[in-house]
Length: 283
Image 1 (cartoon, rainbow, N blue to C red):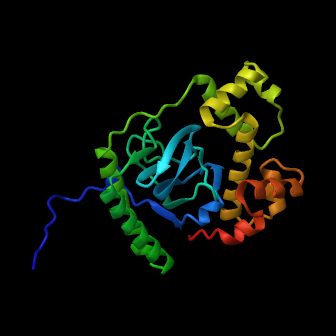
Image 2: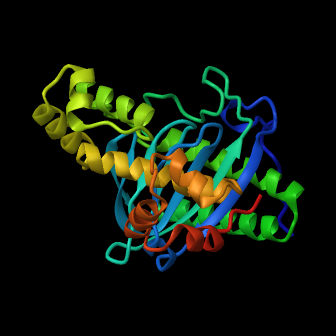
Image 3: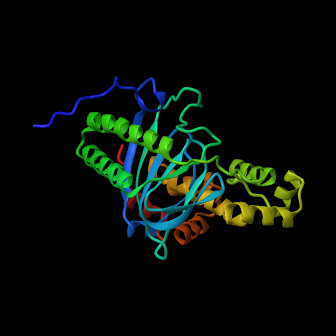
C-alpha cells in the first residue's frame, strides 16, 4: 500500500470565502457545435470553458482569441463573448457556469481581474486532468448528486487557479478607446432600432471610421455585431426562461417574429423552438 498525505492546510481556490453556487455544466461535441452559441453575456454567472478539440476564434469583450484544444477560457459575468463554430469549424468543449462568487479584490461574480487575459493555454497533461474532472462533474450532476457536484466544482476551480498561475498570462489587449466605445454603445442599445449614422453621431465619429474600427477590433461590421448580440441574447432567454418566443423576439429588438425566426435560424442553424428543445441546461 502507498499512502499519500496532505502536505498543507487546505486553502479555498482564488481566496473564495464562501461556497459559490454551481448553475450548470455542459459538454458539447464537435457535431453539436454545428449550432453555435452566439454572442452573449450573463448578468450574474461566470463561465469556465475548456476547449477539448477543434479550432475556432473566440471573441471576448470584442477581442479575438484563438481557440483550440487545451485553451481554458474564463468569462466573467457581464462580459460579452462569442464562440463561433459550425459545420466548417467544429469545436468540442466542456464548460460550467457558477454564481454567488465573491473573490477578494474583485467585483461580484468575477473570477479574474477585468484586465487579465480570459484565456490560458494548458499542456496536454493538464488538459486531460481537467477534462476528467469535467466528465465526473457532468455525470454526478446528471445523476442528481447536486451536493457532490458542488464539491467537484471546488476541485475544478483549484486546478484552474493553479494552471492560470503557472501560465504565462499577459494582460488582455483591450483595443483602442474608440473600439471600446463602439462595443459599449452596441451592448447597451442592441435591442433598439438605430442606424449606422445615428451610432456614429452619438460617438462623434464618421460612419466609415466607425465601421473600420469595429471590423478591425471585433471581426464584425457594426450591423453584424448588433445581429449577433441580439441572437445571443435570444439564446440565453430561450435556455433560461419560459418566455414565449414572440416575447423574446420583441425583447431583443424584433417586432416581426417571422423575421426573428429567419435571422435566428440563419445564425444558429435551427429554429428558436427547436433550439429551446435541443439545448438542455441542467439546473
